[in-house]
Amino acid sequence: MEFRHKSVLLEESIDALRIKPDGIYVDGTLGGGGHSLEICRRLSDKGRLIGIDQDEAAIQAASGRLGEFKDRVTIIRSNFCDMRGELGKLGITSVDGVILDLGVSSYQLDTADRGFTYREDAPLDMRMDQRQDKTAKDIVNGYDEMELYRIIRDYGEEKFAKNIAKHIVAARKEKALETTGELIHVIKAAIPMKVRAVGGHPAKRTFQAIRIELNRELDVLQEALDEIAELLKDGGRVCVITFHSLEDRIVKNKFREWENPCICPKEFPVCVCGRKPKGRVITRRPIVPDPRELEENPRAKSSKLRVFEREIH
Image (cartoon, helix red, strand yellow):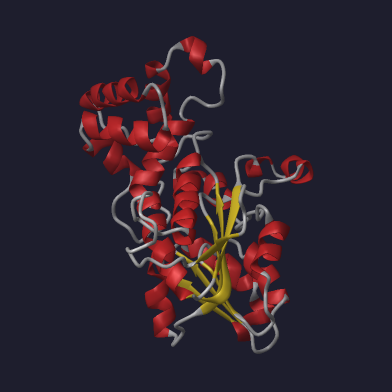
């Protein structure tokens, strides 16, 4: 299957990066290369783009799409939380901008055997990096009831988390749950029928929770952001596109902390903790898709873009 992914908030994020023709930019979630392509079009022969992705299918698709710019592009198969180390191998210690487009690509959702989708029956996989041994099947069949409850509650924000965890544990005593269809059947049984009739697919939140846990998505984001802040040159910007409230909260709080890191008690007349701001938040409120984009790409619905600019004090 061809790697298709319509880049969300494309114009807004590229504008927000304020690309310098001779600059160095990192696309930490390369995907199909949509954002990277627009960055490359704005770079001179001296400019450079480093694209990072952990998905082999994304690497192949983006390599083809960015072929005309291969002299200014370096593509790396890795996780963006290892960005600093990967750039260090290239002799790069600072960059002019970073973009992260988080979440699952359309390709991953539409390729049934990757196990991300709840719309088709497929093996319980959900690995973003298929070099990883652990799969969603291991979580569903291996975590105890309390662990399942915790991740479904915290990462899925699912109010029926306790009942879903209980049903999963009961079902797997009969036989291991091996496919998305089997898991969906169990989830549906755990949610009252009148609730299932409204508010989207009943498995959506649980699938999100398992995917986040398996791929350590929130931990990776937390770890990566502080490294990215240190990589940015003066005036450099980081643009982050999120797709659910958990990611957005991390980005919002991290940007706020960078802008105002002081931890002194409010009654102190002057700062004594010595923590210096890293720069300023550009987006007081997140940028969201306009109606035209939502019409063209319904998957953009929950996306939010936040932007931070580094200032060396």
